[in-house]
Length: 226
Image (cartoon, rainbow, N blue to C red; front, side, top):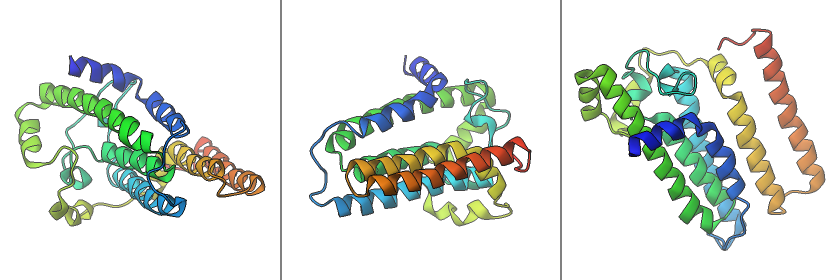
């Protein structure tokens, strides 16, 4: 039952982030009494989440993330960042959502919508695990036994970079849509919390949007190696 739900959620997973971002603006009691604390704590967690995603994509970007909106794996990748934990992209996503909830200083998001998000992602992870076990059998069982599902194995972090080349072009090519969403979300929250003026909001958004269009143009001209 959970695996079936996970497969269904995987197909529509790109709709999850916009939905949960919208929930950031639901009226709520604050987590922190001071918005400055919310911005600092939330901002740190947001950027850690971004760093996890960037590291994963820059070192090893794999088709295990899906193909044609279905769970897929051409091969079982276990080295690099995938030796630190089995689902680094999902770890990054969870940190991002938690960070945004705290950045928005929303108690209802932190206590209700974030746990809901984690629950939905667990269903997706279980569906992926069932797929990988059916395809790779004992190879995946051994990998699963030696590598945590979500919590990073800190002793393996240093080895994640060994014999690997970090590719910034790949990060920009694959992650520019998400980065546009993240920074626009941060900007909207700052404006919603009256931390910046309307004029500042417009100027900063123009900068963000211009950079986004520039990357789109470079990708269209095949300047970026995806």
